[in-house]
Length: 288
Image (cartoon, rainbow, N blue to C red; front, top):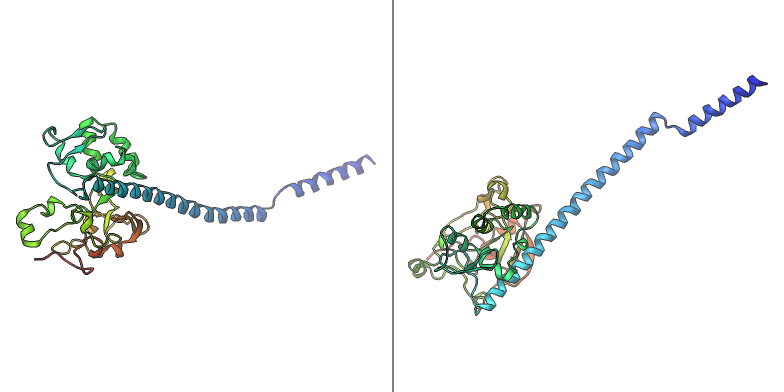
């Protein structure tokens, strides 16, 4: 009887082990289900993260174009000069600097739009330094005041269409001889713009300069007096598409004169009617 009870007890333990345990097949099935779920969850999470970053840049573009229009309203409709020497600008601390009071090493920074648009951004450069560039901005803040002043003007996430919107001295926009030959190259007043819903003011930019790669103060149009852009967008060459970044799946966030913010593919941006109010064709070039 004692042996019989021991035998029954052993059977119960053996049966319990079979119920509680997993076979190799069952374990493999569970692992395959987990792998399948991870394969679904990870791409979805990545897509959500990318979308959130895109929304952040859209918000920055919206605030930038609001500030740009506010500048024009405060200056009798005159558009913020795109890139020009001897202009008044503001330090990151909000200190006004005129051409007469500028210090050595600073004037070139004042030619770029960030320091001149600063008061209309509440002197908050986080508005135009977003996502990856936010970390860049934080590193800049650890530099000396002079170095920070220069650096903060260089690599905002959004580049300005400086040649056609406000004018860029590097393209001769303020050269009287060139103006006499070609007429006014750039738009300088809101009231003269015929296509405010089409014309790009700001766009996603890149420089390709080390840690500053996903930002630059200027974006250049597909053509000027000749073709500027290459035939193909090169991720390793920021100049291939005029410092325009297609970081949003081959598209760029843009803000137009009318205050709208949109996403345009690089193909859509390769159209001069998006850049210059004078352009009457996608492949238009500046000529006498």
